[in-house]
Image (tube, rainbow over all chains, first blue to last red; front, side, top):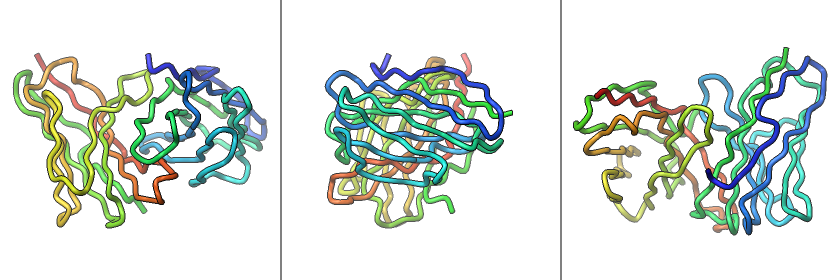
Length: 114
Length: 115
């Protein structure tokens, strides 16, 4: 158990819909990362937050957005969903958000868009 | 355009033997490399890392080798155990001034260790 929690575990929805994925970092960790793993793909970095502020952005679509709240949990919002958005979404947390900090991953949310 | 490549999707090894997982990268700006292990229905777990100033890092049964000139790294597991059966991801990062920790992952290699 990494100490990072993600809800829900599974999510099935239809094209065009909007969903919210939630991540609670390990106790004391200030930084949260979001990654997407599509079929047969490695994990693709989406976005990083540190203590409530966006720190780095990867290949995140404009239809996707994220935020980190004062209690440090983070939410990833996916809108106007397409079939290709079906994937595993992982969040990870680190203490300081610095390069070299070990990233602890949650168990992921499996999103299926029908 | 994949910057981190794991060209073997799967590897099967006998228990007690050596497992060698390979990873190639294309971006010469990468200077920190990691291996993560992932079991089904779980998130990736950090295994071992290496900085580009080193060519070898060892932790128990796990050793990572880095060949910068070839842009290649490998993970050796000796001896392999059935519990090592998992998907192994190679990951890399570059120095953005230290303030950004995002990782670039390969697609993973599924290791099966047979008793």
